Image (cartoon, rainbow, N blue to C red; front, side, top):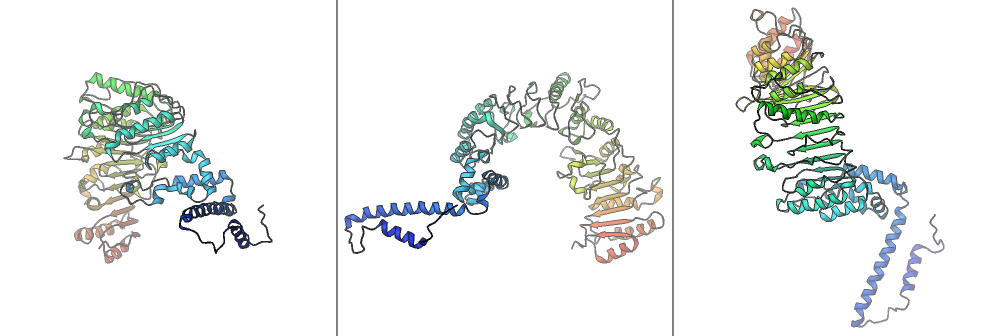
Length: 576
């Protein structure tokens, strides 16, 4: 407990102390000109000493606040939460143009400027300094982070350098720090690495017993890139705890056997300008596929796998039957994303066995050739599954057994991981970047959609009225359809077509129809036919629910529609 002399007030005590300190000086004393500098220096020392006393008193006062009575470990934990929410230089994009505020630059480090206790707690807990943004705050700050982190496992992130002239010096300093600290580095993320600085790559041959995550992204554009400009990951990487590896435009040593512990592997290559693979003969192509599959077979713990332009272009005469390579099993694979020639996708997927719950995202390019390889695999992989919901948006197809409240959550990147959707993206040549109706029909027929209940068709303006029957006329159990823009008009035209035009009406079980982005005010003939069709439906199997959103429509038409549909939902926006 803090004890004070209670018989003397604070004001009286410090006044007496001042008088005692200057007891030898009288107000009547007259200082000579030569004495003033010495007296001034003495008084400055007195002010400095009193400042130290004031600092000590503030420390005593701050120690009585509730937050400073917390255990240092608890306070350090609070700082760690702040560190995650407010890292140094959060506004990195503005850091070089003078617009960054001190708070935006320092982030959580500002806690060291609050009081002596907070500063001591922060500096004493090395884990707080273990997340290092290399040279983002400057070389001196980087040194301080490394010094205060001690031997704690560190996370080192290296962002792209703005000043290209300083690249070699920048990477040289990184190599020095990495040589000193690789042994206790837990995560290493380098957003820019090139072949012209091999010392950095060579350092990765040193033991890294704690390394769990390694990210090497070569951000040099393809126009500056050739086969000799792609850095290579050392095959003798010594990182027994490595779990997550992400490479972009970096060569992966497929022949190496030092990656058995991987759980997450991302490899993104660039096939332009022959940077990764040139044309191969059929035997060489098969040998390359075999080499990559053998490497994946040596990673039995893989849960997430991304391969983009990793495989060589397949020879035109290659088929699943002609490719004689052994299949591999990845029994723990939860997510598999592949981007490649559509023929490659089908050939490779056929030779990678995974659990039925695996989520697939397939981006097939060059769809004018090799589509059969993919459809054969689709028919096999979905043999024991039943598809209830189909999503089509432009060149993307997704199927799942779980209904979503909003179809848009599946496109392009936001989706519910719990639904395990299968997503397929098809990209053709620039003259026709989206798949043709016949290609879509071939893909759709590969899925077991006898029990299909819902179709979400967005941004498919090339789909004519007749195409709806060609693509979906066989699915008689469909009870919900969402269509957008002109595609929605084409759908309704086909729904309203006279029955003699096809053996049975399209979607005879339809109970719910959702129309988006339609200008009802301009399509006057369409709106009249829609009302007439709804009245005809009421005589047999009436449409139970009509949903209209993001459309130009007046309130009068809404009232007329509400009179012929038992349930009408409208977002209330007339779209003017």
